Image (cartoon, rainbow, N blue to C red; front, side):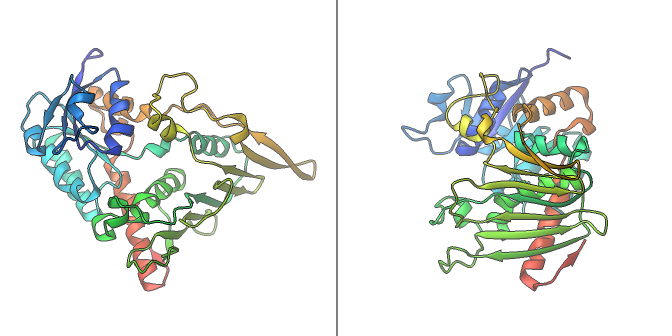
Length: 360
């Protein structure tokens, strides 16, 4: 079983497939890039030219019908995730599905039931669980350096004055579009990994661009974990003019940690680098966070370098290992976890609409 190679098919050939999924498939020893669905190839956007070793299909149905395929990766827009995942499972395939998992938690529950009925696994591509700065925060907390965490701020702020022309600027929240599903999913998933399900959710959705759009482009979501738990604030704004964007600000009973800059793996993948290349995922010293602890009766600050990440490849290798072992517990990002994150998002949407705090 250790030498088993699983044939992987990828539905979609946009940025998600080209930058995130296919490069990671290619560095996963247990996975073989078998086929790609691309409906409308163009001269400079042609899966057959880029990957002559792979079969090319022009429909998802053709891929579902291919008995040679073991795993299907769904890298298409969010409103397609539910029907494609359902069809793939029913065709006897394991599934990696891009985030956001599906638009609503009820659909997630249905897919979880189908997964159990078919014996096929779902892994949701929440890759930012393997960001080096997030892993650094996890280590600081696990080592008790900060003491009991009382406040946790997580940011995904940018300066983007123009609405994107892609689905990220056109798809509505009803179809899992908009900032709460795009960036909010990452922020809330990381908070969920650290602290679990909150007791209450309070959210404010705004349109910072003031362009007349009915869909918000910026969010502030507060997750309250009760009297002894932290207050988590997740923010994503589009009109943030900064030389360095804040990523984390964590305050605890014994210290605090502040980190600027986003993890570099996405930019490296866009530049053609891949896990295993020299310095992949490793940030330079000048991008390190600042740790302040209470020592000898006064605050003492120091530079705290990021941990060396496992990189995003760990998600794919972990899923291959889960399939090989047949262990649902070994799936790196379980569908049930993604469903719980969706429930938080649904509560945030309800809070933003009603102007009231929502209890989970």
